[in-house]
Image (cartoon, rainbow, N blue to C red; front, top):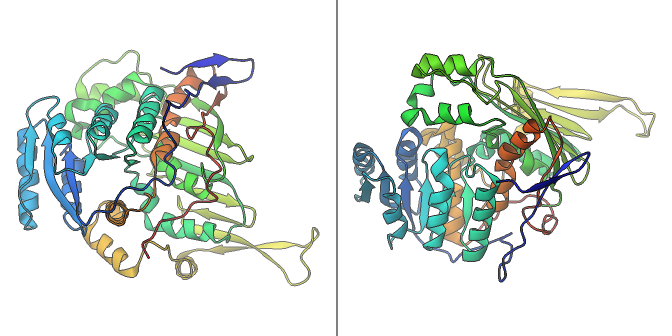
Length: 444
């Protein structure tokens, strides 16, 4: 439930007081461990792939697996056996079989790959029982879940990270490094999206849970792939913060028709519009544009565009950089600035000068070989285990989780109130400028 009070111009969301004795978890570290023992919950399409990928990650050991369907746990055991790994403890058959996994002593990290509605409950139970939590996207569905995850992470001092793989795609990693080194000047605007025609995939979701969720909820229900990479470039809660959000959507022109075709079910009403656009302003006067569309046959796109005072980056629909380069002569207000566009070979040559500090040639080659959305899933898993093994802060913390997930409930609030602006809470409760700029933790 979103607690808010209305004013003529903005819907204000309340920030619950931090419980007594808690502190923020910015820069949170945990004792280093030579081997990270994982319990994987949810072994469907993505979960089984995660079991395979994690088998290649140094220092990762899967000691437990769980799925309501027993045949899926058996498949996970076969995958591990094919890599010469020991058989894990298996949990299945009951709605809450995952509780046994979270209670198992030789599990350090619970890796959650279930349907969306189980993400937060499993993570909360895992942290309550002394485990770190890594949660597939979106990690939380409403403001109550978001604040519960923040409070539990702060209280238990356990990591709670969302498994947002798109921040580890190769273009995004190299472009972020360019931004960090100032190639584009100051980043003032970012765009991201999840535009993906899911018609070939709807039937793959267990009991049609994803279609049902879109039927029952309005707003950008899947924002994190688009917003995550641009938030890193804009240093959100690392010197700036999201302040105000406003959303607009189309009618669900296709939603009910698609649902009937796939399920035979008449859906009246179908709540989620085919296209949702959300505009966000920041404390320092910058902007983000986030879009969602899974119902139309448009080409796949996460947009990923950065606009800086001296340059521009774009991944979709065409990969390119555009830098403003002054012509010969003194640079002043009257100087003519020419644009230099980098594409194809020139783009690669430019990127080669800005290698991400976490992306060694060896890791990039291994990631491409192991795969997972072209390799970015493997880099995500590798970095998670690397940071835990070395006792380092994770690349994404619980406040990233909160900021990126809050677009779903807050966009719905804006839409349901005639596209009114909505205040975005400060999930850090005052510590959003404690860190100056995004950076990666690395072992010496």
